[in-house]
Image (cartoon, rainbow, N blue to C red; front, top):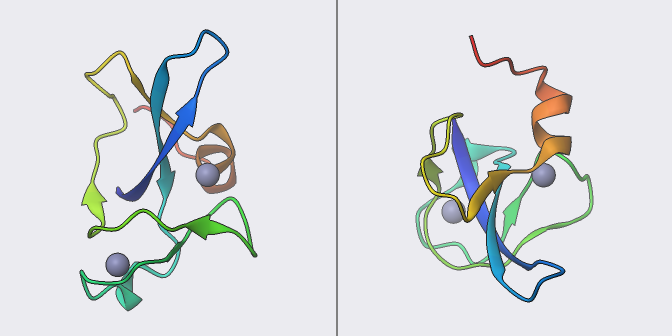
Length: 78
Ligand SMILES: [Zn+2]
Ligand SMILES: [Zn+2]
């Protein structure tokens, strides 16, 4: 699933990488500095860099999916 990353500081002070499902991925040209995300109509991420194709089952412990993005898409892990 095409996603954009957001770095979020967790309560214990560590930084977690949160993946948001990309909205309008067809408008990504690989050089944009803003990406709309599926869980918000108004907000997006300003992290530079292209969209990434991210597996639902993440391998890294410091990564997680945005639950709102997944809920909105009714994604299952099947
Ligand atoms: Zn999200
Ligand atoms: Zn882009």
